[in-house]
Length: 211
View 1 (tube, rainbow, N blue to C red):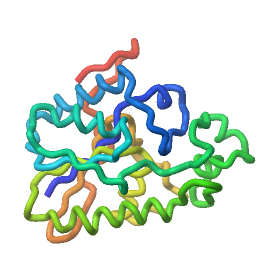
View 2: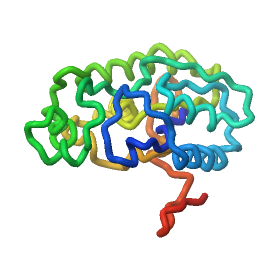
View 3: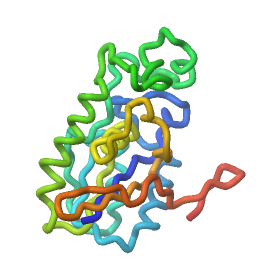
View 4: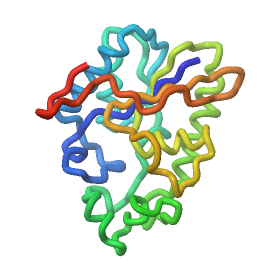
């Protein structure tokens, strides 16, 4: 079984470099276009089902990605983005540069991060692990191609359930950009990362993008 993890398209907060978390920020025009281009690039994949975070930026991405397919979109709370409590809306660069900021360690020292009024990594990893065990593993043999529309930090926690990546290296490796696609393979009850962070669009010097 192939599982495609898709990060949502761009929002105005992505463009402004803000932490979104549970804030329900919609896709902007570029985010919609990125999802459309990515959908076109994946048009030949016959998805059996799409699972989505209920947050509007992920749900809208799932709807665009589905295209003219008739497969269902199923929302699951476990696919929501990591919660950052009252710090949501913080500018990432400001938090990274201020050691007193509640999200400083999340950005600069993830191995030491402790949430003030949001979620710790252990809670998000537990959500992802629960989804894998209760939804994906039982689906083997029933589905061939599954899409999951979700969020950057959640996807990284999801991958940590598959490969024991140290939290200190949470931000290392291939970036999960807007509409990046990571393909997992599930075979005989074991899951592996087959391709990580693939983009179906190419940024141009003038800020535009194409397939």
